[in-house]
Length: 474
Length: 77
Image 1: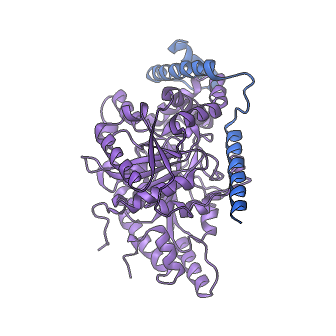
Image 2: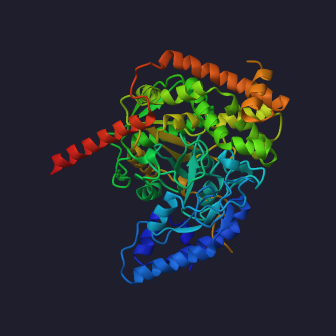
Image 3: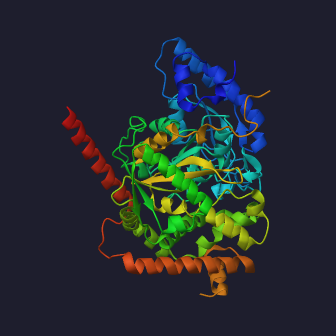
């Protein structure tokens, strides 16, 4: 049997639970697609078929014995190659760690294992998770399933590509300045960057720990909610998670947004968006309104300051973590990544401390101005249509930096603010590539964001569309 | 600081030698960020303002959510 690839993550879990499909069958089809389609999009770092098959057999046996199954039992997944698993190489997309074998397993992988999910292997990412396009000089560019002349987005490139190509229904990514939301938007899938500290970072390669978040990339908001049910919560090995409350991610997914208010910020978030993106945003807001949401206009504060604060924190933390390798192994970094890391070495400690000390007050200020009395804000994920690989790699370095920098204009500030953000596909631009909006909320507003994303997806079909050549395998 | 000063500091403090192109780019970006954040701090950072940590903000919001959940579930029972 085959054709299960069209099922979403929750549908697969339900099908395994009611016995209409075996976990082994799901694993075999996903492995075949990973081996066939994965290389086409340069999405795969390492496949572990035997681990997946053994876990699948265990799930099928448990069901046959009448044991209670976990919420993701038998569902095949694969994850960004910066999440550690004991004994499996975790390259972090780098040459420096091409043979690194961790002796710990990431908390998020442990939680997925305990839920019954299958781990098929590790996925492509930008070098040290530091590119919004999927650029990686050592392992090649991550490619979009919609058109391989375009990048899959980064840094969680493989995670976006495998979900878009219906290889697996879900994958983990990490997000320091947009690295879950960029590939989600560029590949036409749903991506959730959780509140900083809601999902534990233990066992994940750090980029800038004050900003890093781990979260799911899935076809739908409903599928992301199921993954968050498994992933979220306190972990004594990550102190940032200690305040995390218990949240019900799936209970509110009813399709009705009556009583919900969505802020539509003007200024920065409108002025930087191209007319084509702005029109798609208008269309998506009309759908949310039709679902019952009330829309109000707001005005964001000085985003130049928020973006500068984010960059100071990111650059200082990155250059601190990489200083020894930058000294001892400079030749093992691509020139582009080295160039992005170096400015952190020239920033004074007082600027870094100021950026951290202002974080709570600037976050309060942003929330008051941008969300105000609403429940969440609606902004574009990317201000521009997805650029081609040529546009982000060829030409004068200043031009490339401008194109690449613009991609993160609406995402990186959210990491400094530590807020949750759900990226939802909402159509296509003239180049045939997907576009997306973000719903940004207060800390721990994930259930509301998922509720709104789910209501939108019940009324639209962008998340159901299949990239060319991603149908059944011959 | 001039571009040469910055390159000298990076070399002295971190043992990393910047090329001229790198020094120019580092100087431009670090200088811009330095000025923006310093100006922001001058306006916003208060000596006695507390809590200033993001974790504390999250803990406050989490506590409020938990309290509201208890209140709501109590009202429904």
